[in-house]
Figure 1: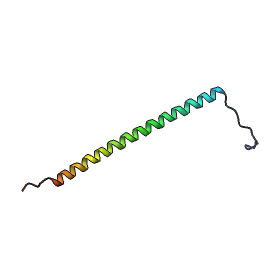
Figure 2: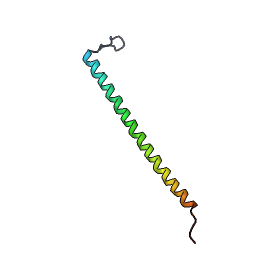
Figure 3: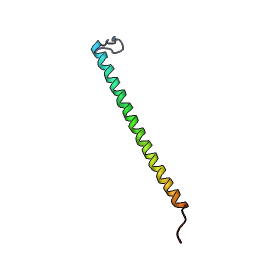
Figure 4: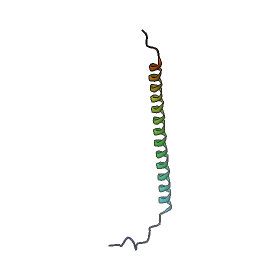
Length: 66
């Protein structure tokens, strides 16, 4: 059995480094897209809630017909 602490770290081949670089870039783009989608959803929800609140406040201030 090989003791992992004594084993020398394996160096990556140029192809492995390039593959890792592409993978990291894709993961970064994916994370950014997910963040942007979440921000758009948050903004849309906030605007919807604001419109509902303003409608409620306007209805509360409107005179009640007698």
